[in-house]
Image (cartoon, rainbow, N blue to C red; front, side, top):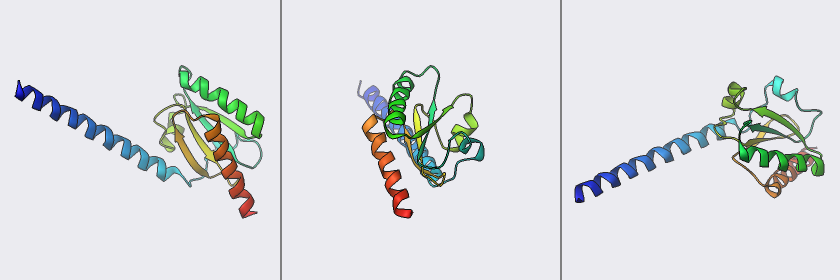
Length: 142
């Protein structure tokens, strides 16, 4: 009985170690994408210059529907441009920004650079604060 408990604990520890290693690797890849410029094809989807959001979604994702509603409200209230990208059909683009989960959002500054990447659902207030920070950073530069 004691042997089975020890084996079970070892297996649980191994699973946790692998999970943390995968999460750390993903976070490093995301951090490397911050500060990069949008590819021209993606930048062309955003009208004008100014802060914007690139939204990676999946067509069958329940959280993506919730995130879409939040982004529609944000676009209406804050006048922010939102480019939608189907992460499954544009997997190379998702991979460039280390998008491994949907919904995910990239916060883009006026220069077309990625300033932050959010993996997973983000509520309205969080995204509104990101937009405010982007606008303040743009105002400080001007």
